[in-house]
Image 1 (spheres, rainbow, N blue to C red):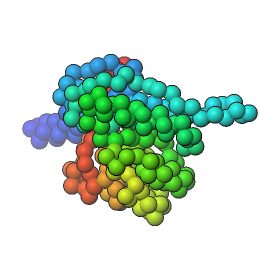
Image 2 (tube, one colour; image 1 turned 180 degrees about the vertical axis):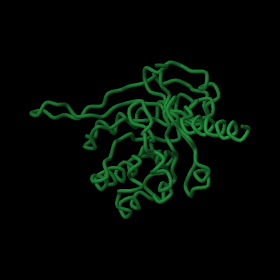
Image 3 (cartoon, one colour; image 1 turned 45 degrees about the horizontal axis):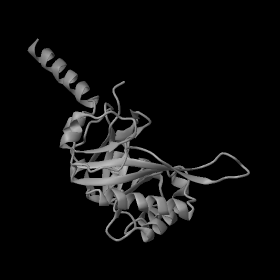
Length: 238
């Protein structure tokens, strides 16, 4: 009877652990998008990735212009130790005006008294188009002042399906990739299958989690070559 009770408790613990929700108060680095209410965890956050703009092309076939849309909070002095300025890209064909606006924002955040580490590009680069993305990032890296780093978000299937030689071209171009374990507002159901391969990217990487999503950290992850922490995407309570 005791053995049966013990096995039952172990099974319940295993299930609870496997489906543990991501609690933001266990982390210190966060994505902060526009429209997300302030949360207590921000008071102890060390690093923020703050959305500041979206780059997209118009749907007008005749006049396909690329526009920069400012988003997120206004420029202000934030208490966090490190600040990344994030841009959501829907196209990689940027005119000079977009680069001018982007660099201008970086300078304004820096002048406001923040320690701006660099910029992060949030672009869903499918594996087959990584070559084009690498070329874009190489050009962007050359445009950035030397005191700024370059971060990107990455898809989990890069570790399994991307050409290793193409991924290798990112070395020396980007300073980190934050691999997202979620899609939309929910964790990817089979995220665990990709985790063992992340170190094969050969790049400094962090793991991106969604607040309230599923996460069960494997013991080997923190020992993986290149692993440097987590970033949690904050969202409003549902």
